[in-house]
Length: 120
Image 1 (cartoon, one colour):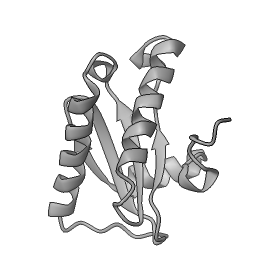
Image 2 (tube, helix red, strand yellow):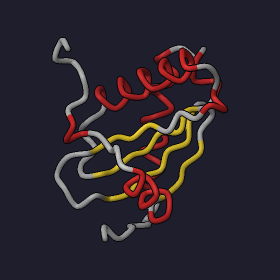
Image 3 (cartoon, helix red, strand yellow):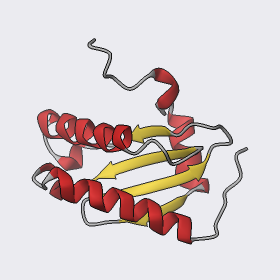
């Protein structure tokens, strides 16, 4: 790998972690993606991407995951949050600038809400 990958410490990988975030975190819908956000109790954010077969072929799912990881990499100054991005089909053809603007706006909407989920 060329060193640009997402380190293991920054990833959400286990099904139980995804389900904990789905159940206890906030859900924010956007045009290109849905975010599930939950405080993780650590100093650094972590990312999970849930690209299901409903999104399209393996090529489409992998492209959506690459775009989601790049959004996360560019905006890692968000503190200790666990974020799960569920891409929508529109994410595949959207300009990256539009994706980045929506991602920032969705995170800002999350901060406006006073909901804090437990980390247990």
